[in-house]
Image (tube, rainbow, N blue to C red):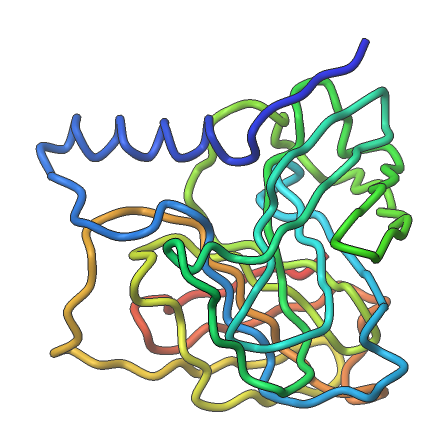
Length: 243
């Protein structure tokens, strides 16, 4: 049986319900996931690479592509047949006009929700289509995943490796104020990401998933062993186990 859904529709709906129960009114702003790409530029050979990782305790995934850091692709559709998940990415909507994009080449994370019935504790294959690019991404099983695709998130930070020394950090908060990395340090099986804090910044009152790419560099940290990421600042203080 093939399952299809608009990615994150159930997640955003649950977020909206939570805000209403709390007596809050969500402010204006996009309900699509936000992404903060890594500032480092890549080479020409990277531009057609597609990588991926599991997030949110197995409920969600991230697809990493290379391109303009200001034009992060959005997950348009997700369909599942068994453990094979077909994902279509599209360029962000420019509000009816052609969106201007910077000419840099950086990794960008596009996040979506796994369809109900997919088992994150078993291997998953993502069939990704983005314009002229098509690629298969193999996601290793996560035996520690306790989340069930299609169920409500717990709105906790999570992170997963997509490459040597590179990870996607998922946080929850205002879609208009994604985390801004101030510094990143790491060695062995631990790292610290410090985020900028601006107490005067005006942010919308929605609760959206935000993806941030953190790149430690090859051979800087041990991404094959249990790894603890400490978050400092940006109202994100805490620790995250990177899987």
